[in-house]
Length: 88
Image (tube, rainbow, N blue to C red; front, side, top):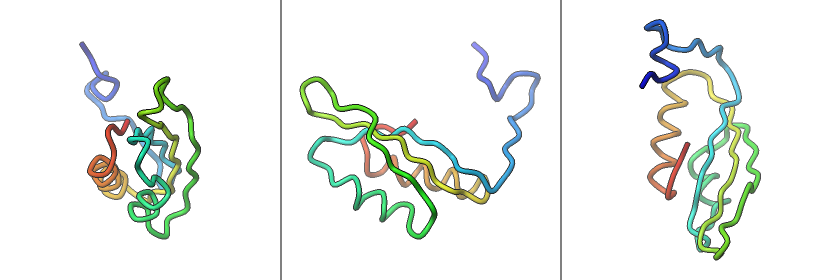
């Protein structure tokens, strides 16, 4: 199976700065606003709820964050993974 970044042996070109979109899933008991504020700091961002699981156990959010380079984008991904169930 080929991944998008492997097509033609090239990585996708990302032009920075850009607003990068993350999908984040938290337990329903999590304080997502505090967690996001801790992770993104003073960066411009927008957090929007996208779904609550049928049994109410999980909440998913769309997070858009202004990142300046690959390093920031990947560090933020790693930090978000630390506090959430899943990050895409």
